[in-house]
Structure formats: C-alpha cells, structure tokens
Length: 140
Image (tube, rainbow, N blue to C red; front, side, top):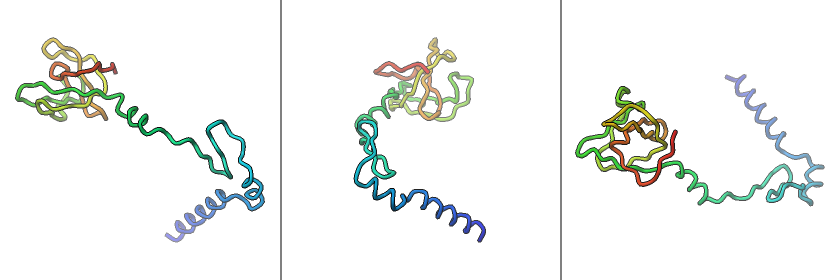
C-alpha cells in the first residue's frame, strides 16, 4: 500500500515538473508568441485552437442516421441480432414508433423483401418490409 502511494506521488511530482516551464524559458517566450500555422496561436507550452462550430458537430453527429416508422399493424416488430429471421430476437419495437436507422444490408427474405436495416450501436436489425422511411438509407 505504501509503495503504491510513494510510486503515485513520485509520478505526480515528475508530471508537475514536466509541464512547468523553466524560469528562464518562461520569461523569454512570454513576450513573443511562437510562430505557428495560421489559426493556431501558441504561448508557452499551450496551444490554442480555434473553437469548433457546435452546429456543425451536432449536424455531423446525426447525419448518418435516418429515422423510420414501424408499420406492423397492431403487433410488435422483432429486432434480431442479424439480418435474417434465422437470427435470435434481441428486442421489440411497437407499431407506429420511430426507430433510428444506421444503414441497410441484404439479408433473408421477409415476404419477398431482402433488405434489412441496422439499428445504431449494434442493437440489431429490423426487416425493411415493416419499416417506412422518408429518406434514402445508405448501404452498410
């Protein structure tokens, strides 16, 4: 126990001294910034990057998903572990609910339809026969 405390204390001390500039170097670089590529300003050992546009990040986060509506007519839609009815059922989605879709893939036939949609975060697959989408879904 005491050996771990000493080891962690020593590592913390080394880390503090590694990030602190020396007195001579700090006074020399405090007056003038170090040349850097355009849009990046560097003072001491710290780099300031331009702030990212939050609206672009928000749009990019949801750009890969399409939303579909379950159309099973008063029964639940099975979410399966793979793109076929031979895979096990891992979850259900209720009729007329919205489901986020990541991509589509070719799989087992459901009433003549071989297209399956993958749900985000590897939650499973649903048959395209029972889901209506408003936009094109990319292929996996």
